Image 1 (cartoon, helix red, strand yellow):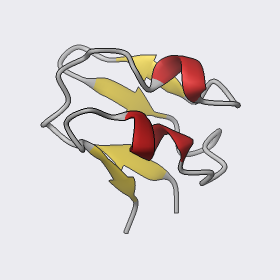
Image 2: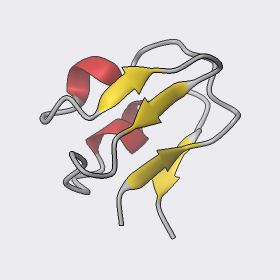
Image 3: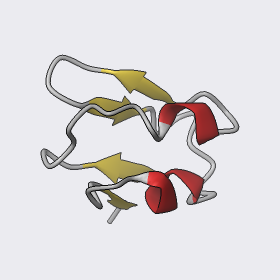
Length: 57
């Protein structure tokens, strides 16, 4: 399953440059991970300073 970003996202943008497949884009209230592009590498999860990114269920 693709990674997801919760409402805890502060839109800091730390996750965007580390995504190797450009799956993360800015939404209205938070960043969004495109599940079609996400390769489940998990790099973004470790970059998030507020732990808003997790593996999808």
